Image (cartoon, rainbow, N blue to C red; front, side):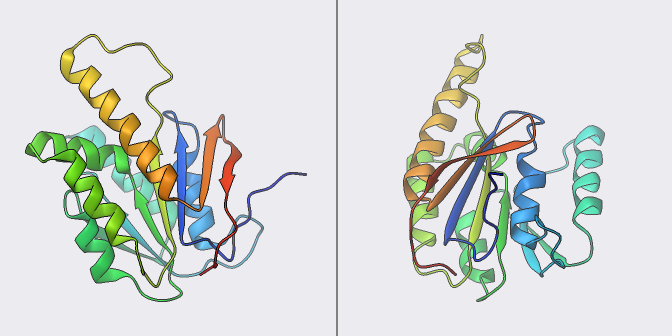
Length: 189
């Protein structure tokens, strides 16, 4: 039976997938170490979402309830690099959910996306804790109708490529099933 290793975690893991593919749930299990029935370990959740409406607030509440009491949650819709640097503690995995919303927030704020991505990648160097990023794979669907939609899709693709290049492990989620695309031997945290 194929499975995704859970612990020790590599320094950087990227979990990609489409909407409702199981990427957040899988990433939570990796961070908590519960994929194979182990007792949950404490983990840090860095949330990039902002509850702009009732539907999003409901989604955020459902995510929090699913994670349980072992998680510390920090909200970082824009300054993700700073949140990582300020909150990384040796031995406590960090889950960032998700890069797609972070990118959307950056675009809405008029940020230089390439510079923000460079800052994020630089922030990963030397972190004492393993980091798991969740991101949407948006390039497999229809071509967006609007220029903004196409710009977002393209920026998301470039962000995913940059993070996959940096990541030690990349997992693609489809229908709740993990497919390991990359698992580089590295010093494990």
